[in-house]
Image (cartoon, rainbow, N blue to C red; front, side, top):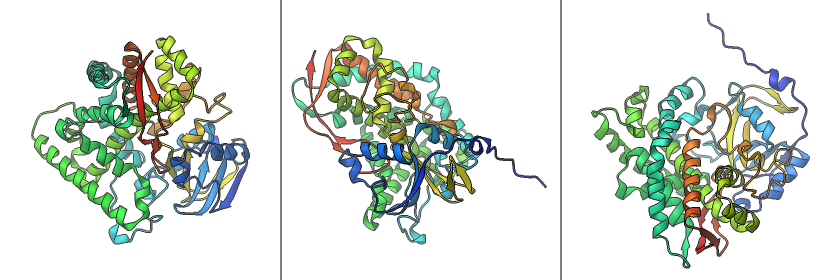
Length: 430
């Protein structure tokens, strides 16, 4: 009889001890609370955790019990042990809230598997289908089109007049890119943004009304994409993501798994890049010295892209679930425990980044950020996100355009997507 492969635990068993705590909600360290993000006051909360107990457990939150992992080294450690810390939907998936936490009746639960919420080997098999769309060669091929579309959009914007940067720039550019990746009908491309917002907002699980509305939107999306699948299933191979799935082992996946992977690709391709583009506008408004430094030296743009992604951190956390009792830097993790890996905190880790709360366009180690994750689940579309943001900054520089934020933005009220609903700006020449 075959035996299960051994799990390498040497990394954790020989690790240094870190301070840890267990606290009962309500507690300041319950960072599942949406108000701390919409009010942009999460910084000191995570800082206090990193200083006092970098690993800590919250008991009795609205999202159930969960561990906070708040430092870069500890998060990399968890990400590097996927056989101990599961991403699978079968164990709760990749966000802090699960069906059991939302108190969803069993008969109302609809699980939509996606490859980011799978463990090996299924994760590897499905990721391998999508990954060729994001190779360096594909990025080189698509860069010309990205630059053309970015140029056309910037040339259409008013100078000296107020407008919503999130809607006119961030959403529009990323939605156009998604439409191209899926070969999606151009006139309907804003549906992708709508579906992304409904799919990525974990706060919608809090009430029966919003859960049902969310599910309706997801099935609307599924029906639309099922029609696209049916139209293309008898055609030849093509580079769009739907065709890649059709001409691969993924062709036999269920409709719910198809929907799950669509949600992953739409949210991953929309919310993350879009909120980093908005973070570029807002972040440089906070630090005029860095904005001037970048304007005077456009050669800093590639590094500034990494720094903007670090500073913004467009996805605040990812979840893992412990598959066995385990010691994590001294903390007693039990089988079934929910682990919140707070990228938002790791990217402000003072032991890694000097003056971490400041956006510094020439920061030497900006690429050490964890915004794209780490290990086998690192974002498959990271190159494309960096390319889109880099081209935006380069085309802004070519036109000597500056974004001036003229009022505080409206932020996303939630602990998963970390971003902006709207942001009023005015463009000026420099």
